[in-house]
Image 1 (cartoon, rainbow, N blue to C red):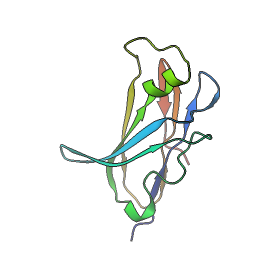
Image 2: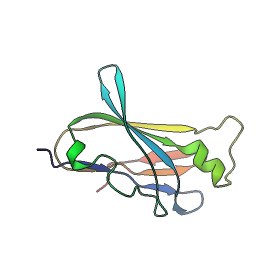
Image 3: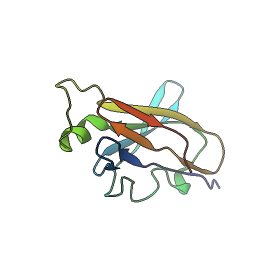
Length: 118
């Protein structure tokens, strides 16, 4: 049985706080197929209440997190053009071993960054 799991954390770098209420979709990529696994929203700390991919569902492979940044930024009152520069932010990554993967997002209206966290 796999022991890996996936978590995320979103920080609003424009306001200097966690990004609460940001919707996230998780997909597994299998060849040309993109299979939706979960939809969650961040809590007051900018995290999901549990693992976005818990141990019982973990499998090595290619995944994609889609962060619904435009909806969050508009809701937070940040300046967003009618056609948002950042609307959906997809992060595609691979998980190759049974361990904890943490994929955070640092977000502002005109830029973002990510990394493999701990």
